[in-house]
Length: 119
Image (tube, rainbow, N blue to C red; front, top):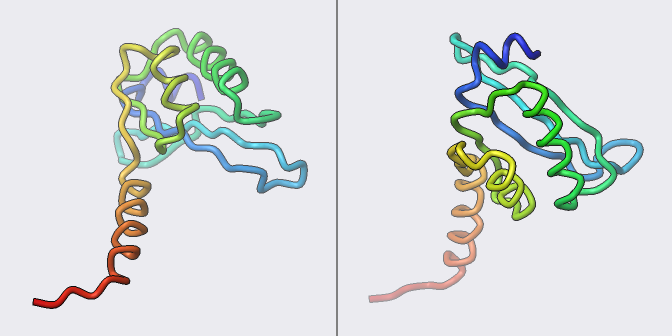
């Protein structure tokens, strides 16, 4: 994982599942993209909760281990992730995942479609 990350550190995707496993603990997953546009696992952590302290600790440990921060990090718009990324990876560009943006737009447009407009 470390060798792959050091070679392809440009873009890192991070996401978490929320209590979908047997122990009801969040899983934080870090994914990289290689030269063939294929994803590879950089790291993961099962954490007791999604508090700033827990998420911040994982980010700090992972990127201190690598010694190099990513150029771009992509996540959903979770406030905890946004705060952690700004503190642990201040030089990295933080982007919001396109899929999450599309889902947000879709949900807002669905609400608007309930209204009928007439001219």
